[in-house]
Length: 177
Image 1 (cartoon, rainbow, N blue to C red):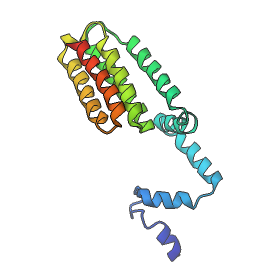
Image 2 (image 1 turned 30 degrees about the horizontal axis):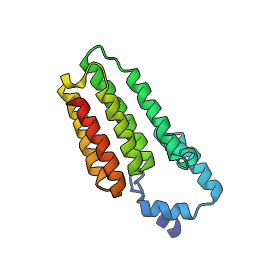
Image 3 (image 1 turned 180 degrees about the horizontal axis):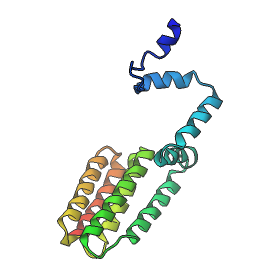
Image 4 (image 1 turned 30 degrees about the vertical axis):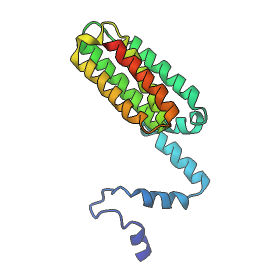
């Protein structure tokens, strides 16, 4: 009986499950068999669309980052094409949705180059948007904020890559001026 109590020591008295730490989860996963791990992954994928997308990325797309970037860029293009441009309220909603979706894809990859490529593409599509974002401060602020994030990211890259990305950022800024 004492052994069972130690196994469930992280559970509170009231019956609500307390979340385990990453270390505890890692230890438990290391003790699991391969079939148990497969069952857990399948079970996880049934709860949230994002979890299923992450598992899909890790299993099928992480090995070919270039095609992953191309696919995400196509989705960004589609989202910009679907934007309701009748007024700036709807444009802002659509742009925020597209940016939110782009950042989810960036989180899957966790690679700086992928993040820069996707945000550069997002900003390019935003700069080319008609009606022009120059007429709306909120859209300009979104654009500027993403460019500033990219400039900070560029500093963490190799010097050769920094030069290329800085040129692309300058080009984007020139489109809005």
